[in-house]
Image 1 (spheres, helix red, strand yellow):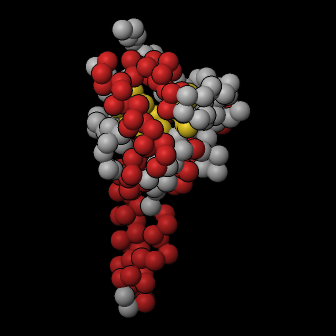
Image 2 (cartoon, rainbow, N blue to C red):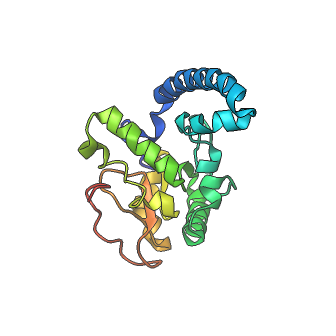
Length: 207
């Protein structure tokens, strides 16, 4: 079986750890400022909740499992029931499970790198990519805006490792599963009928 070492994926889904550390420091500062303002505000409004209310939207967004986050180092399969899997399009989820059952006979298993994502998580990833590449144009080649993302609708899934990706490239169409972006061999969608021919891939997520 052909197994190749995958080059570092350019998509920023797995590159957010540095940003998370920055978020921790920012959150700590925001919380400290909010509490200070709240103490002053209590004297005026009489209640802590009323004093804090104007500041609640200042806390930066940080994705959680409820947003579809699969944490770095966490192993998730297509059989798990975490939100990233449970909120996928059921047809895509069933097709991936059927494909993996066949791939298992070749000794392969599918590791889900990303599945369904909330609108907020997708926007966060796009902003992170813009910061990473220092270019919105380049960032959009790898991370779609929430209104264009198939992850947000539950119609896209990112699969690893490399040997599973090559297996899906060769065999996925039997289940209607296709690689849809030429620059993302990990990204798959239901794009044809089972046994059909996959459509020509788009060059990237911005196409």
